[in-house]
Amino acid sequence: MQRASLYWSKTHWVSLALLRLTPHTGVITLKKSLQDQLLKAGLGNKQQARQINTAKKKQQKQPKNANNQGTTNAQAARQAQAEKDRQRNLELQEQAQAKALQVQINQLIDSNKLSTYERGLPYYFIDGRKVYKLKVDEKTRIRLAFGQVGIAKNGDDKQPNFHLLPENTIQKLKDRKAEKAVVWHQSPNSLKDYLEANDIEDWSYPKGLFD
Image (cartoon, rainbow, N blue to C red):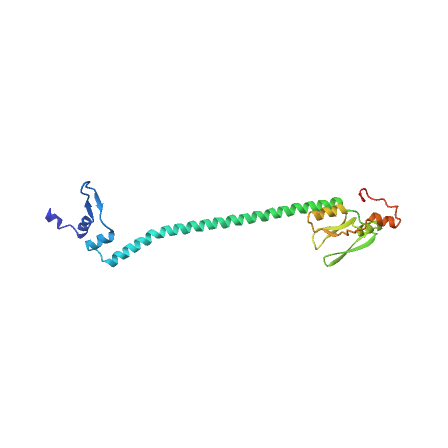
């Protein structure tokens, strides 16, 4: 047995040196730290052992830090995408509401616009920096002066269409915060008082004009 053991390599003897039998159980257990075991076996110096321990600690910490960083980046990406989706949904809702409001405004104008006159009197008004005119009769001109009739527009600013509208329709446009009422004179004096003061009695007043 002694002769056979001479052929064992140094590594085999080191392996046996690293193990021991527990007295009562006979179970083989590891003994001391890897650094102490290598030093005792003569397989390395203190500097090499420290390098091994340092590398081992870095290897243990690196996956944990990498996983944490990866989780943080994924959460930030999800939050950024959620915020982007929320903003996009708000924009779509605002666009849909603006479109629905524009449809209501156009319907109000088209269904309540009054007639104009090709051979009437020119009525001048300003929209923005430009001066426009509509031809109206004398009754409409007076009603415009007292706010019983107003002028609203639809279409774009380059090619606007102007329409005469009754007072209640102009008010509905303003209630909807529509920048459509171009001319609307809210005079403190009533049109009825004006007509009576000027002895005008032969007009056929529209129903509900003075209600």
